[in-house]
Image (cartoon, rainbow, N blue to C red; front, side, top):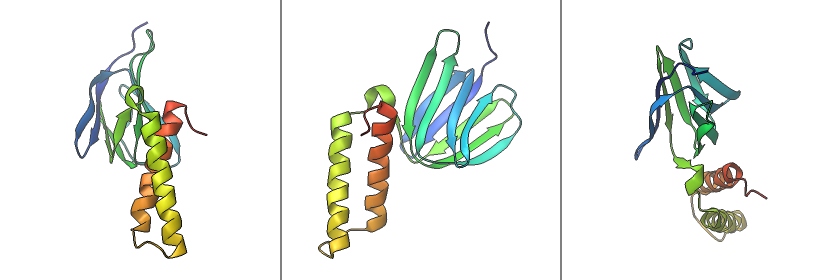
Length: 142
């Protein structure tokens, strides 16, 4: 059974990560996952870093999964827009690169804590969260 489709946009500062028609989108809301179908009531929500899933066709299991950073989500009429600081499609996550980025950021943060570095703590924490998120979404965490 076909489900009604609606316009879905997943946008980063670098441009669109996904733009098209979908049957459902699930985003990592600040208070838990938010699932939206066509004709959903208007909504504005903050998003946490996590997994965003775009169900292009639920009957054929055509799902695009992204590791997304924090941002905002809006549903208005038959349009859903997720504005996030980063989005990497799960099939393109480089697990070794993400692990390397995580290790580098953790090592630099340890230097900051020891007083041996003047790197920006907030930036390092963001790099750690981003790498951890990619590993979680790819299934390679741990």
